[in-house]
Amino acid sequence: MNEKQYVSVICEYNPFHHGHLYQLKQLKAQFSGVVCILSGNVVQRGSVAVADKYVRARAALNSGADLVLELPLPWCCASAKDFAAAGVHIAKAVGSHYLAFGAEDSLESILKLQALTSSAEFDTSIKNHLAQNKNSSYPAAIKAVVSQYLGDEFASIIDKPNNILAIEYINALKNSNLKPFAVKRDMQYLSSSAIRATGNEADILNLLPPQSKAVFGKEQGKDFCRSSARLDSFFVGTLRRMAATGICPENAYSTPADLANKIFAAAQKYSTVDQIIVACTDKIYTQARVRRGINSLVFGITTQALQSPPPYTSVLAANSVGREILRNAKKQTDIDIITKPVHAQSCNEATQKAFNFAKGIEDITALSAPAPAPADAGKTPYIIGD
Image 1: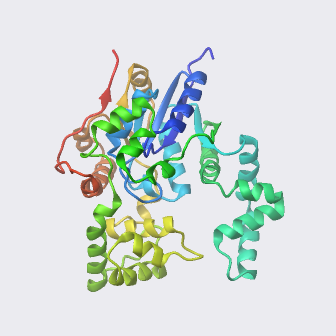
Image 2: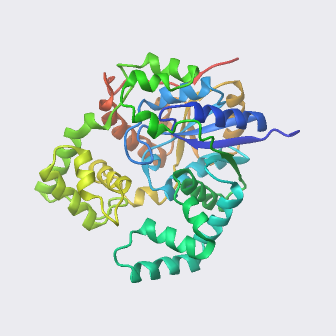
Image 3: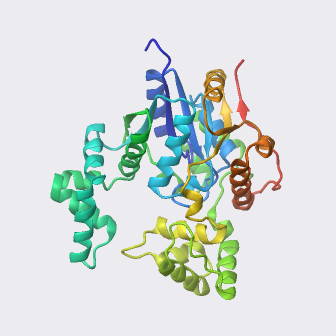
């Protein structure tokens, strides 16, 4: 490529593993610079990340990323649609030309699925299927209708997590000049969830590439591994207090009244969040949806908060290429790019409000670390190079 071309990838690095390293290597070979838009300290499925965002950003930069920006709360723990739209908004704002994503299948197949699932005809077919099959869940309805239009092969394709997000990324790209760039997932590498499932910190570290292991290893026993279970008392206690005082916000994000009532009732019976999630999961509400509902109720995340894209992003890590991307972005961007947390208070009102809201949540989620740092612990980006 004669003209410099930059690619963004929306990521969580929870933790940064060999599959992520493989993806970054593919992108480094194709583009002039790689921008990672990294989830804040709560990931898309609603649980806390295994380490602070600055730790995960450092692992990414040491593994080939040029610039790591934050996808802030609450967008980083939103539904796939809102998560994707927020990430694309930031990628566009910093001048990226492409959006890369992992996929279990070909871009051609993903594009074909996206065209179908974004059509009005598909929505009508889903509604008809659910009306005719009272015991069907929404995900099952999607698979059935996709099979009807495209065959069983595509029904299995849409059932894969990376592909589901890929479809939402492509939907979000409609209102931007970014082009999609799919990196086929190499199935020899364990997924983040499979790595986390080992449970033992030492085992998790041994499954990471050297650059990543070195970063996370330094935080072992301090910031790594964070665990949502350490927040059980806070979550359950807050839900019980809300139920006792009649606090049930009508506008809690992704949380209809029936789900909120189920969560409150379960909180009276159980003492852990996982138990509440299991009790509330059914054909309508997945575990991720229930966990998202719990977050919305406890943290006060509203539907209105997610109706607008993030007004800011924070710089988490950068090298010399990344700083060049930042310099160019600041000349044309319409969002605030916060280099140091203290600078947020000199930004516009929308950014200050969003930043302070996110910080309030992160001060709580920091308690999920083995040895939590003080809430006011100052953190700055990890910068390397000239």
